[in-house]
Length: 450
Image 1 (tube, one colour):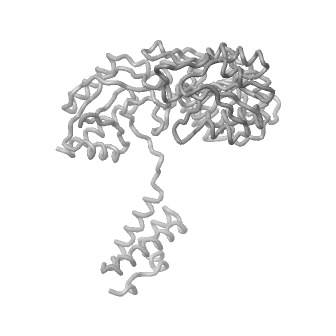
Image 2 (cartoon, helix red, strand yellow):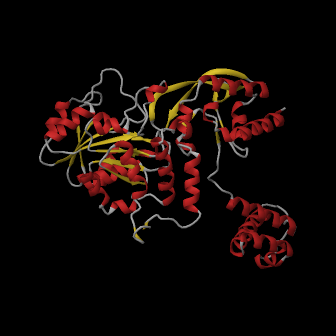
């Protein structure tokens, strides 16, 4: 059949059924969808297809518009047992942090306005005083993530000068973030010392000269050095740095304010411990073990923090009002001594095995599954190879991968994992407010499969 049977774009726009689409999606976008749909139909006709009726054509246009405007950043139910899941948005915010974000976002705010003076203020004031009070640091500065914090520190404190680091700490973390590449971008010169597995304090001492600007210690993040290994302690490096009048920079990665060893995990150095060990600047993430929004936090000596604060790069990587609102609310949980109850990441870490078992058994009774012992992980580059005991709901569908795929098509999607042909659901990472949605979604899945 001839392509002439197809209506023009203008004719489709003028038909009665198109008015609703224009009202909902706007004329410009609707016109674009009609044009694209007609191109697809023309190609189908050339391959021997029939031209559609106008009603069918409009249905195809509406489907295209819905696809174009469908949100891609969706809430999901994390049943994987990975607490700080980088691919799923890392740390979920506390109720107070979510309220703070909403209040900051829905109207005007005092982001950079001093109410007492009635003049322009500084956005740094909103969370920095809380950080100083919490850690005892002389000063604090906040940027948009920890990679930016490292870049700013190296650029402001060591550009065109040397930074000494152990070879075992030249790490790459998720997304291709490499310490050597960041140093190159900052203009600092990398001086790597020691070997892959062993670095001695004497190696660092031998590398010092008049061009040395910083000593740098970097958290291993997502791997462990085991076996025949040696690295200087932060305290020993700080003493050496100060003997030579050189600042000590500690990239802590996923910084924590609480002692992880109290909850069955290896001890992760806390931010305060690193400052007490002599680090002049400590930087870490806001959305990992801190349990807040994505942010990079710099703490330490006022003179060094002020140099970073005044650097032109600081403006390019500053946080927005919603980040500062969420971070302030999160920090207040620590100051009030309520982090374990209020911050989801720490509530999950501290969850009692008996409570996890009770939830898993309730699910097993409802969904005709079995309860298995298993492990949860912290994730997010924190505490590599460390795990927490948990109880899992195990289902054994006929085709586990297809079942997992269908779980991801639910609203909200359920993200689970497979082991030995079984689909596993970990109650540790399913938020209490998502419990009903989780059970309803699994009900629909199993009803459909039966």
